[in-house]
Length: 318
Image 1: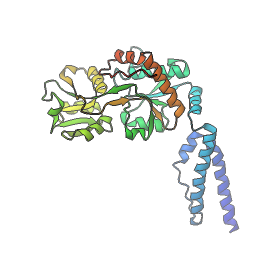
Image 2: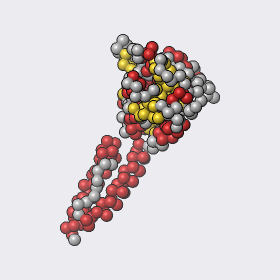
Image 3: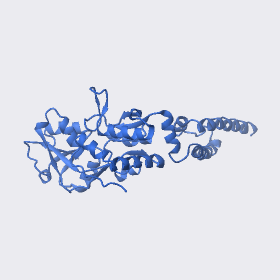
Image 4: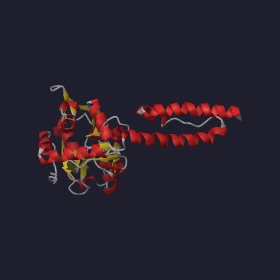
């Protein structure tokens, strides 16, 4: 029994050293979250489970005291880093894309990110862009790969359960991209027909709930949706108006296609800046910045500059 106690004591002593290391190392703490602490010896299994449980409670309490559950420390961390990491689409002119002429990322998302960076760090050059796919926007925030996501991020209940959203900066609606000489002239023409929708998109949720007349075909990207149209696998590609219009304008053969509105058939889509959960100070900072940009007319100017259409102008905040 004495030998068992000594072995047990050594194990606890080793873990105590891990505790101390974890308190000063966020990455280590994240790695340990995936580690299984079950002991190989059955007589210690319950002890290890309890120890692990107390370990996580203890380290999180200390980390809350050290770093704060608010984002004040995280803002300080961003300032110490000297860069604001912003997740953007990086693939469509008007949204965000690499422009070889200016040798930097351009578009509405990029400009808005630069404005926020200037408010926070004093210079637009402090904005650093990270390309994130549409279905990776939530995870990029949860995993702290980016500080903010500005990528036509529509507010939905499912997403809001995982990340926080700023006040909306743009309100959009659904539209359809179809062949100009094709049979689809209005939404009702899609009754019983196939329509392509990007997987995990807000538009997919809308059509699943409010458009039982059509047959939904999920695609991985809008590019895949256009390909499906050209191969006559679907009659239309559904997405938000800004998404479709910007992509449409960038197509080399755009004259083959046209956009069709859907009126008020589907709920409006609110675009907002995505922020990691439980970061109230950063969220408040972004909201104050957006309010300033709205009141000064900067947001509307940027939307016009980059060809955003069907904008529902947001009222100036008090």
